[in-house]
Length: 234
Ligand SMILES: [Zn+2]
Image (cartoon, rainbow, N blue to C red):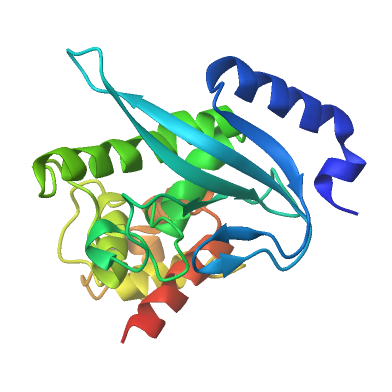
């Protein structure tokens, strides 16, 4: 059974809060076979957010509309939504604009989105905190013809390394792959293992506490997905 069949009340709540804040978007139960965008057809029935995301342009009366679709996965809200572009202004397969070949929006590093999502797993939060920065970035691109001066994470492996480096809060020179390998494990690493910081010492004499702290913040399965993305990118 899908989440929206077993939890009708939650679906109603999500619909209501979405309608209040984003009147041009709605949650449909979309049948198998409908087109999400030019590149993608829905393979089975699913809950789909459809419509227009309207961005106001600061200091003006104007706005930019983007047509988007957001797939709410079968075990929503445990898994976070996936956003697809469905607008001629957002070119599918244009990696420089962080839009993949199936039209999905590259919103950031898997573990990072997951971490944000778990703090508040609701559709309005996803739109406010995760979709909005992506579309603001796109709107700048559309109005200026070039990417904005503020950052969007790098692509693929580089962006992933940036995120995991930030988790170290200024500790430098770590072997990020070794660090990720410890985070990707289901069970806690043992104290006698080598610390990935490069000191040559054992974990318990070195950064065991930091590793433990980071492992509490992110899910090992998310780290595995990010490691898989790095492998694929080779
Ligand atoms: Zn260390």
